[in-house]
Image (cartoon, helix red, strand yellow):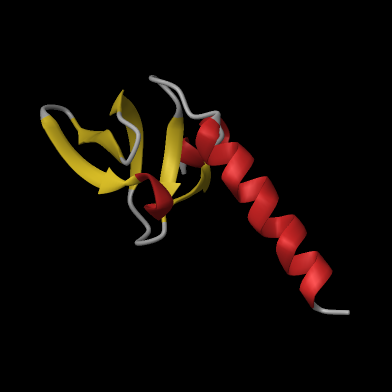
Length: 72
């Protein structure tokens, strides 16, 4: 009973990560907000501030961020 909802969430998360593109605003599992500057098969380069970029695993991306949420 509990396996199916978890599988569905995992599948949705996997689809989200495969659809990432340059310029998307995202939130990492560590709570870092950033804009995607580069993508590879395994890594995502995020710009978290003017001139500050970090590289994280694609699996560390928790979700997208709306513009409204980013302003807060």
